[in-house]
Length: 186
Image (cartoon, rainbow, N blue to C red):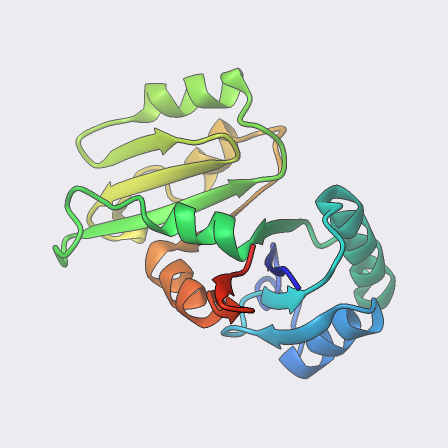
């Protein structure tokens, strides 16, 4: 059974507190299998036979909005997709003076967003673009980037996004990649 990860925006930030047991239960109530969470920031791992990711995202978002009382943008990647995303390294990786974040989008990257981010690239902030992700390489810590907060929000305006640190993604990959009948899932 294919395994997926849902990255939820706005969980346990800004007053939107949700216990992970409750979140797991909401996913299980949708008929999803092997539901688990990874750290309390809206990372939910699950299995399902459904390959209709857009439909699945809609069901999850609807359920969470009904139960939590606010919209929770949801970004779903298969464990195979996530493993491929996690292989893209930061040229400065290993340096304590650099950070690598992945910005998830739920649509292919619009040219306007690519253009705005490209214009913001600097010695501190560099971007690598994929179809539905942007890799943000920061020379320094996230909070030291002039793009942290409003700058990035303006650049991605009009597109739903959520972001995770590459270290977190690699830890999720280590937890999700498992053999299924002798072959990796996906």
